[in-house]
Length: 196
Picture 1: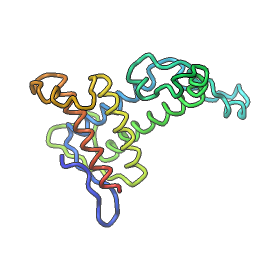
Picture 2: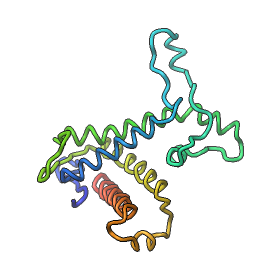
Picture 3: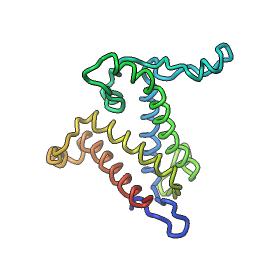
Picture 4: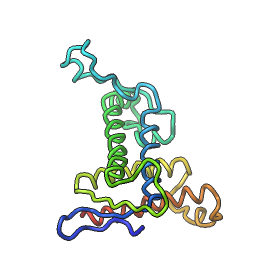
C-alpha cells in the first residue's frame, strides 16, 4: 500500500487497498461504531410522534458523567476539570452529538470501501481503488484520528516510547496492533498531503 495521492485533474484523493487492508479498515471502523454506541444513554431516542417536534429539537438529555471506558473518556474528555457542574452540563449538551458525528464518520469509511467494491467476504488478490472528494477525505482524516486514539489508549502508547514498541517480537500481538496504529498514521499523513 502506497498511501493516498492526489489526482492531478480531479483533485480527488486516491488510494489502492488490498482486500486485507480494506477489510481491516472496515473492521476498525465497525469496532469504533460499536464502541461509540456501547454505553447506555449515549444516543437520544428518535422522534416517535409523541413529543412536540420543537421540544424534541431542543432535547438535550445527554449523559452528564464521564464515560467509564478509557477509550471513550479519551474521545470525550472532561471539558472543565475543576468544575464538576460545568463539566456535566457541557457533556449533557455535546456528547450525544459528538458520538453521532464520530459514528457517522466511521460509517463513511465503511460506505466508501463498499462503494469502491469491497465485498462482504473479500478474497486474496482483490484490490480496491478508493477515490475521496475533499469533504469525504476530511471525514476519513477525523476517523483515523479517532481510531489512533482508541488504539493508543488500549495499548498505553505514549510520546517517546517508540523503543518499547520496536523492541517487541514481530509475532507479539501488541506489536501487531502497534503496526496497525502506525499504518493508520501513515494513511492519515498521506491523506492530509493529498487533500491539501
